[in-house]
Image (cartoon, rainbow, N blue to C red):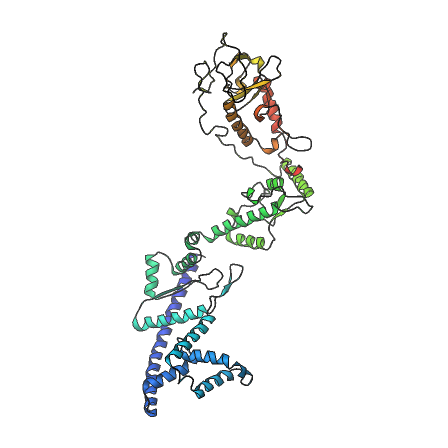
Length: 548
């Protein structure tokens, strides 16, 4: 709503309040005149009948209460109860004639005149219960629109008129706020206030009366959390709600059985943390689901709710509730055909896939590596020096022969000096490299060692004639899992070696601690390593989950 429309609305409301005030003042003047005339009539009638003024006034009020909305009286309760007791006479007195029959019978039998104080209090309670039973705050629809506001709205308007009358007569200032206390009620937030009271709230609280009563309703229904959430704009709330319902739709589709009877890929709904809005093909690959009814961008990506307006969000929410938008499960053949078409569009350049940017600190450890404790054996004390170069020991001709330690035994400090030609394989870790070297003369057994070496491209057989191997199984067990996790983060699932059936290739059982061995020739010759890396990177970007 524009500022001009808001200004016009305020002017209209102010004019309406002024008209209502003038109207009520005119009525009050007329009521005062009627009250004066009524007093004179009652006094004259009492004189003619030779009875007291109080007696005739009480009788008049008792008779008139049947048609008034004043406080419940004993007469109201008596009429209500006797109309129930004498309900069998409705056939003889249909329609409004029945109530006239009840009043005349009460008067003829003298039930009200002969009533004592105890009976009057009882019938007042009956009248109050009957009135309370008719009061309600309405009810709501299943949507955001409210159905009825109930009889409470009429009662509130009557109270507001009484307060307004008191304001005009006595000059008191008042403010009346009424909000529903139950989310299932349909009563809209209402406020009734005099001009001075409205000015007070709007100036001292810096909030309009409409917004104040709306915040009061939020606090009454949901407490402080609801009060905080109400500070968000309607558009922000709609965006959040749209994301939530789409995520639930994705979870429902991913955990359902496909039309062709294929079982779901996952059973835990909470495994899905978010919707792949920009890369929705990943949801087809991973879960076998596809969106329907959701607007797509020019690059065949799902539009983000952040860029939508309030009208479109409301439209989509209605479509989602009507099952006309959301996610659905695909059959095996349908998913494969969709992926083939998607691959063709990518190859033709119709669809462009943007790779996720690699972090600048990817692969770096979060904590410093533990310092090597053995400084007396002549080995390095840090995996790398401050200049980034490795620290190497010099060959020791008098080095003792190495004996392989038993499992669980602390390795000895007198590790042998082995030539590079004896090194068979190497698994790259996080700055610390794990080498597999022969542990026997015939090469039937191997041992794992950790040694600091520079990058593979900087190595050559002439630069590293010997390497001091430090056997430390505990250090290797800590380093290798971190290296595997780093490799899994830097490489996508699609680059995992697979068999002809499409299943991931199992790790070589001969590889110590689960590392895939890399020939040492690739470590010495950078060209071999680069060629293999390019070959691995040229593979198709396709998840293997649909091919299991």
